[in-house]
Image 1 (cartoon, rainbow, N blue to C red):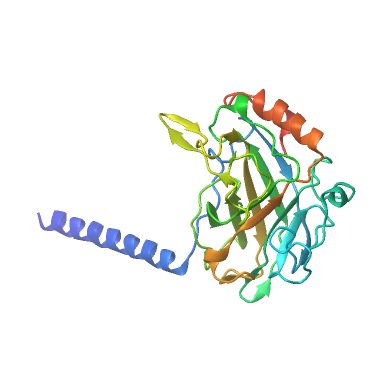
Image 2 (image 1 turned 90 degrees about the vertical axis):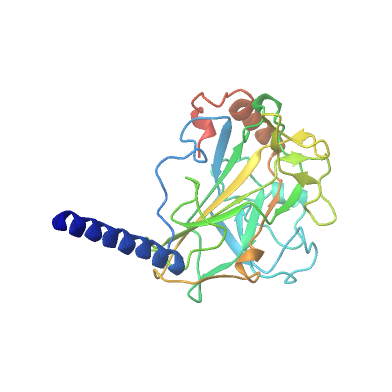
Length: 287
């Protein structure tokens, strides 16, 4: 009986030590490495397509919030279109180059510049997923040409790439794998307008209604769920992360649809409308 009591006491002590370790790691802000498979990554299946658009340039410009006013914004990191600046025009964007893997993707994507432990860091990988998002994939329409939208919610951070889902709503303070990832999900329902007073009100997120994922009546047009996944190699394991826009809660991303519209329409049709969630994606639909 004495031996059994001693064994129980030893097991209880081990459990307490393990719990304390978890608490310490959480306090340090350490996030787990990316898992191999998740519903968000969807491997090679689902009504979706992906485009890789790596870092292009950095500037204190914002052609959505501060159109026509160079230097009026905090610093942004731009992805995709190589020419995006404060005075950019739709026609001008179409005639310039892109970092995107698909030649038709002339769109501009941008987000606040990130610092890690006081040092500005550059992304080495950015992948943009366009998905049905659980809605009826046959009814998803391409984003209209010229659409402008800002997303300041549905944001998650983690150590490692965010393509595989997971994460937390604040950046970790330490990453043993020296990779920081952030994911921003844009709203996927439109009221038919290209912009609004705050660059957000014309868009809304779909939600589950009566057992189905649908758009609200105020924003009835179903468009793709655009997910922006950006990874940064880190100079050190310990942060913290800081944003040019301010506190971590100010994280956001901008999307300006300057795709060659026929190319976008073709991808939405062939990779979303014609691909049920259980069917493998064609090669052209993968990044």
